[in-house]
Amino acid sequence: MSDHFLDLSLLQQRFIPGQWPNLQRVVFCGNIDDPSMHPQMIDMVKHWLGINDQLMVIIFTNGSTRTESWFQKLGRLSADSCGRINVIFAIDGLEDTNHIYRQGSDWHKLQKNWRAYIAAGGWAFWQFVVFKHNEHQIETVRALHKAEGFRELHLRYSGRSADNNEKKVTELADYETSPQVICKALVSTRVRELPPELYINHLGDVSPCCYIDLSNIVVKDRYHKIIAALPGDAAYNLHDASMERIVSGDWFAWLYTNMQTNKECVWHCQHNLRDRLIIQ
Image 1 (cartoon, rainbow, N blue to C red):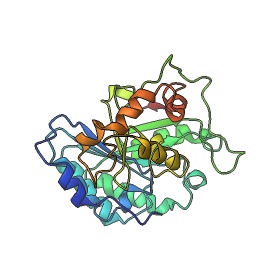
Image 2: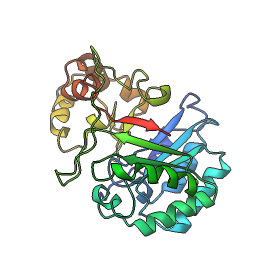
Image 3: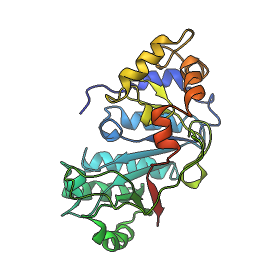
C-alpha cells in the first residue's frame, strides 16, 4: 500500500468548476492501491461532479475496503447524481475463487459493501477477469449479478496471469493489431467510443496512459532521463504546472513524436494487447 496520495487541494487548484465544459469522465482506476482508500475520496468525487453537469465519475474497487456505511454514503451520492457515479466492483469469481487473483480480499465484507452501496441507490457494475480457475463460474455470476442489482456484468479477457502460473487467464484466440500506434490520449479507441483520455498518477505526474506511469518502477528511470534531457518546458507534474501547460510542453511533444517507435506505445497500442471486454 502506498503512503502517497493526490491531495484534493491540488485538484481544486488545477480543475476549477466551469472551466472544463468538455471533460466527460474521470476514472479512478486503482493502478496504485484501491481508490476507495484515498482519505478524501468522497469529497474528491463531489469536486469532480461539480466540474460540469455531464461529467461521469467511475471508480474501480475490490470492494473489500472501508465499511458498509462508507459504501452506503457513496451509493446515496450516486443516486442523488442520477447515476453520474458508477462503481465497478472487481470480483473475479465467487467466495471460493475471488481471492486467488484479488489476494487478501474478504468475500463477506465485499458482499456487505456491494449490497450497502446498491441498496442506497448506487449504480454498480460487476467486472469479472476470466481465468482458468474461475471460468466455470461465469453462468453462476451472470445470474448472481442480476439478482444482486448490478446493472451490468463486464467479462474481461486479457493476457495477465495469477501468481500461480498454473492458473492462467483465459486468452482469446487472437488480438487485434494495428498498422501503427493509436494513442488513446489523441483518439477514441476504447469500448463504447469513449473520448480521448489522459492519466494522472498518485504523485500528480501526467502521461497519456498508465503504461507510461512515471512512478512505475519498470519504466520511470528511462522516462525521467528522457525528460531531463529535453531542452525546453518539460513540465510533467500538476504540482508544478497546469494540465494545459503539461500537454502543450516538451514532454508530450516528445511522446507524440516518438510514439510509433516507443516501446510501451508499440507494445500496448499497436499490437493492442489490452483487455477485451464483453458487457452483458
